[in-house]
Image 1 (cartoon, rainbow, N blue to C red):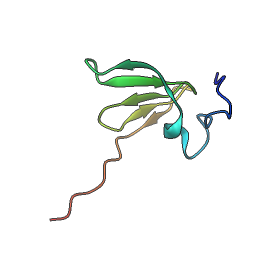
Image 2: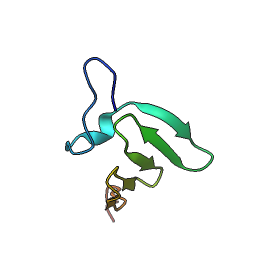
Image 3: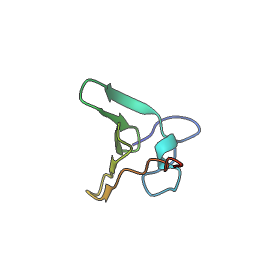
Image 4: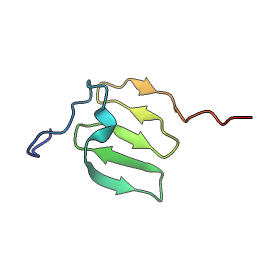
Length: 62
């Protein structure tokens, strides 16, 4: 999907969140990355194959 040079990480790469945003919808809380990943404001993700990545916010020290 990515036409950038150099290419963005694919959805299968561990750094897939580094891909460029192609469509941003902050009012709805999500962005579409050029590798097909939907990134949600709560840090959850929806991958192009339908797999879900649970939110992974850093833990706050008590």
